[in-house]
Image 1 (cartoon, rainbow, N blue to C red):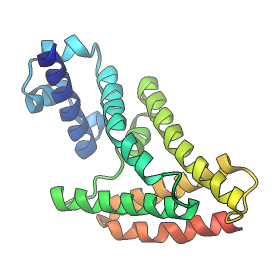
Image 2 (image 1 turned 90 degrees about the vertical axis):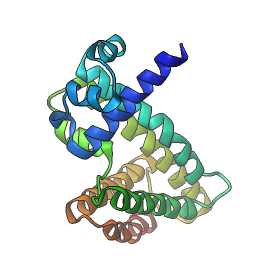
Image 3 (image 1 turned 180 degrees about the horizontal axis):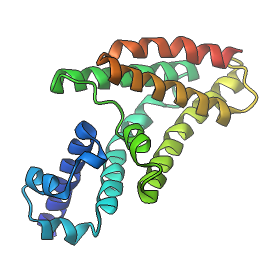
Image 4 (image 1 turned 90 degrees about the horizontal axis):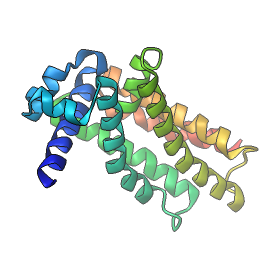
Length: 196
């Protein structure tokens, strides 16, 4: 069973790496098999379709980054500290992408949503689910800030959605400009939204 898990993880990592760098539509199962060093029968043993493979790759990625989100949004930190940490970790991640690949790859979920949301319901649904999980972290931080009197918003969920839209827009701008510096604009916009 260990070998099967290792094979499955290699397939998922190869899929994620490829779709992150190239986009979902520009990645074939042949490319995934070559990168993961597996046969097509191995790939289809775990994933009956490309949609299932992409969905599983996104969930695989989320399982790895969810712990990072939990560290960023610690209850021991103030709401402002949490949100600043969110901006900081995103900046660090984009800078790391550029250092490793020479390019800002952006967010795999945003890229998948932009490309596949009208083409593949399974992919759209998993991306929406991940967006909601991230917004959930933001919502808790906003609610903490409201209770502490630091933020003035009527609806923490709506404010969290706005913050996430700001971040996804900034990440997309960073990708287009191939520079993580654009993320520096996000915190002032977030703060303005939260303090009214």
